[in-house]
Length: 339
Image (cartoon, rainbow, N blue to C red; front, side, top):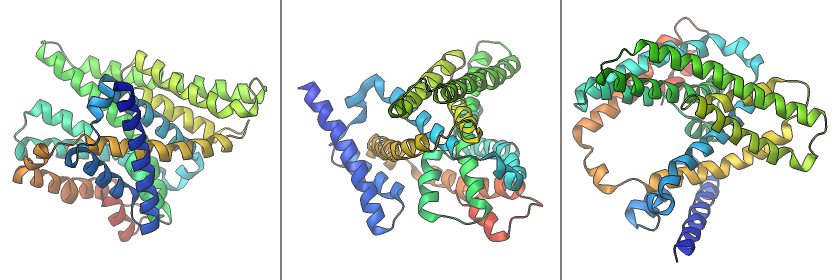
């Protein structure tokens, strides 16, 4: 009975996700909107899908692997030649923008949500992420012209591993502080392990795939399965070396494959793009289904003020500082400032 219940749940998630994608296409609406609505109706409203009951401890590892595949596909779309046009703004968004977003979100969480400074710092680190699972589908729907689309695509993909690493390091610093240890060495070591370990593992994964394709060690029909297996292996190995560095590793792997000239990876990109649609559809239905009605009722005025601060103050100020003296027009900056 349990197996049948799991099969029904998996089938419902896939059917609802793909169905919402199709309906969004027919109605010319952002797919994320309908995916969230469908997940919310299937989860807390009707109780048809309970992700925690269905998957138990497997839920978050499944989500992590799915995000890894999505980031790898995103990395495959990033061309280094684009950096000559958008490199300055992107660098600012990923450095100054992250710091501003993290600091202001921390302050807003402390005063509006009445959280401790340590928890506010952790929440701020988590919320610096714009996320490829959100940005990618929105960009496909809106199709912005010029540099803004490329900036948002690069930021959405690269900032995800940055935010994940930052959140893990802040959490470790909080634990070390409570235990009476210093946190500076933890941050430095964590960043070093993520950059070296994640970068090295991702580079090795990309090199192995290129070598295998170039030397004809694998037949054409196994290119996509082998690439997927390598992505999962790279993600897992990097995470064993440094928690949450797997996302950075698969992003590096995707970017290296996209910019090398030894072999063509267009067929892998097309396969991963199709797989990404299925994964994003399922993820949003799953995550929306995990919401609880009681949690939504408890948001209150403080929660509204906090969200308002993020939308109306934090993101616009971060973008304004990051694009200062850039060649972007006022309309392009306004578009970037919309979270």
